[in-house]
Image (tube, rainbow, N blue to C red; front, side, top):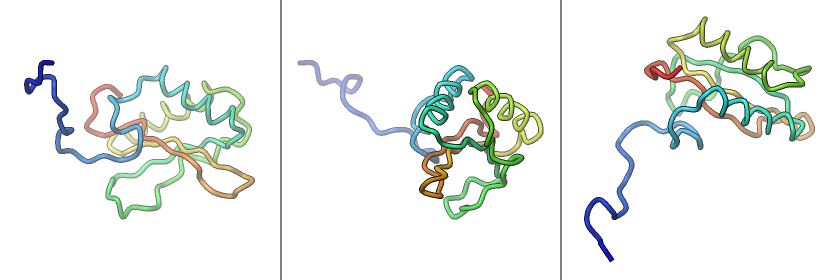
Length: 119
């Protein structure tokens, strides 16, 4: 068994991690659509939020428009994400899912970072 430095486990580079999916490369629009489809399939209400700060103490993000109560397709949500990106390109943007039975946010993930060139 070859245990050279290239084949052994390594830690991730030092950089701020935000939420679960932040350990992956930035999501493409196609991947965002799949995640949003999961939100819709679970019966959650999608919403788009943005914030200029990514500090862990920043609990409240600004809601982009109202939650998308009537969204039936992931493309509708992606259109709102893209509109938010255009208007708030220097902000962090995330999609969240709200469970109206539990009355709380049950998931969220970052879809745009200001320094990311992919978005």
